[in-house]
Length: 181
Figure 1: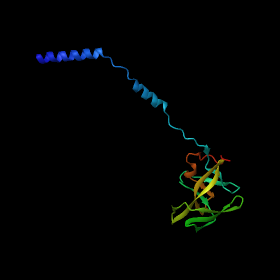
Figure 2: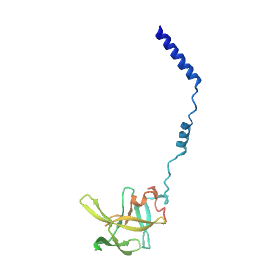
Figure 3: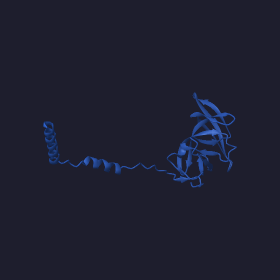
Figure 4: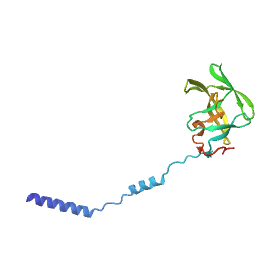
């Protein structure tokens, strides 16, 4: 019986304490919710906009554009060269190469420092290609980018544009072509 009285008194006391103190509104929760709603994902701007599966690109200082295949699956862009030869300058590997634009037969010889070499897997063999930095004009923008030098005479397009040029600059719609000038 004493236990019952004790429990009854404790229950009444806790009930009366709860009635007297009213919880204050929790403003910090509302502030956090508002902050979350105001924040939004940053938008990535693509200065070249939506481009197609084939676009013109200028290899500086050449005068005429090359028709380039846009390849989102390729990490690094690639360029068809007639021939290339390694040489050393001040203890550093360089490569000389010649580019012929097949649309107007314009020829340009380059000497560029080899940035690195990449191994390309082929069905019958592996191929090591030099990678050089080139300046190109793409959609009115001058871009310095890496290109692997390759024998692309078996391909329809002399230039392949990879993700190293596309990322953050363009969105690709393969139903389009020649959207850039």
